[in-house]
Length: 229
Length: 117
Image 1 (cartoon, rainbow over the protein chains, first blue to last red):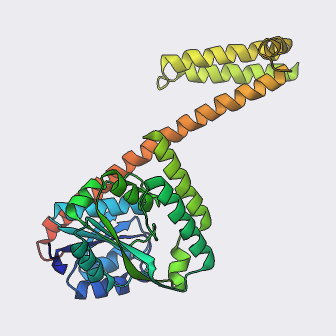
Image 2 (image 1 turned 90 degrees about the vertical axis):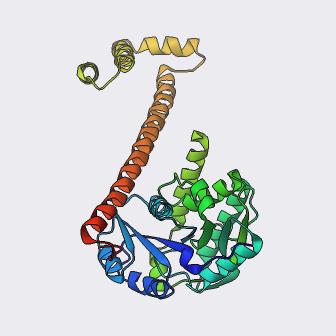
Image 3 (image 1 turned 60 degrees about the vertical axis):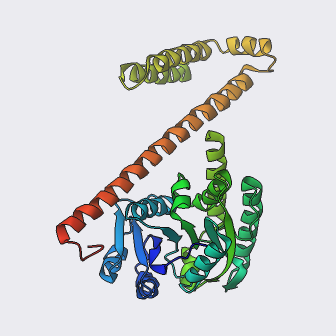
């Protein structure tokens, strides 16, 4: 069984106008000695400046191109720097840094390629009803699309091996990347495991989150991408 | 009569613009010429569209024209979507390469200590 040194984990945080919270998101990660990469996706606020001051790696997109594109930029960079494990992590403070070692432990125990966080196996705080319905619908749709049996398909907290990260090459620049990651897991027959994690919905994260209309756009992107393959 | 002149001027202007643009392929230019020629024919002799519609099993020329306009418009729109999508992906690749290169340039300028500066 492979053991994961937590210092081998590179955390990729796509961020767009997160100056209000990015320092508090980075602080517990830095104190735990992770390698942290913030990909500033063309923010117009001080996201880059604050992240640089915190002492993490900062890559800055010249213009806003989308969360999926930012994640892929961070993954390419981290792999180039010799990352052994890649963790994707949202910038809005929804995740708990304490869940990362839990993901690592499950990834090791199951000898899996990818550990996917699940808020429905774990817990949520202040999850709005409409959001819950949208997420459950996404689980149904993604299950049909990828044939993966999952309880939470759009959780930003994931841990994967470097080989899995190389196999999952994100083409969807905007929000459809979450489904695209799962489709890649299915396509490349990567071993995956779902891990209970906590997701905290704050007033801030609810404002930054996806609307029902965004979900329809994601669906459209996925359908078109499927037709173009 | 006035509407026929206005439509003809618009169609002739369209074909002149397309033919004079080096960006358009020969196929696009010929296609535009054919469409504009058919357009002028229908503008001056609208009864021709009725005859063609009857041959194709459609009640009226105006209906046939609507069906064709919607079909051709949808194809063109989808073509534009694909082109925009392709440009978007190329743009993403450029932005990505720029971000990564910029990082290494800044790091080499500031020394090995600072990660992000």
